[in-house]
Image (tube, rainbow, N blue to C red; front, top):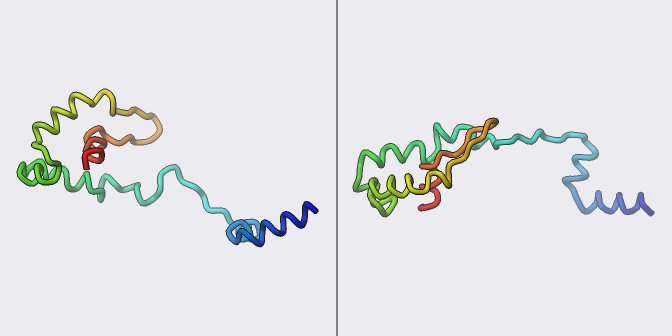
Length: 101
């Protein structure tokens, strides 16, 4: 009976059947490769420095002045700042921008 249940499960799950029959299992990464270069290509790291140079565009994007943004950031920084010894954490500025957008 147990063998029949296993065969039934293989018929209903093509992914499991493929993995069991081929023995191929992809390695899982801690950080997806899409996000490895977010500091180089990510929206925050490319757009935010440019917005700081144009206060009107910063206001249109964030709905607040740069001064207000940094005031809020300094008030909540201790609560949103993270420290980690084995991977890079998201900086508080980026956390606040994501929350506000």
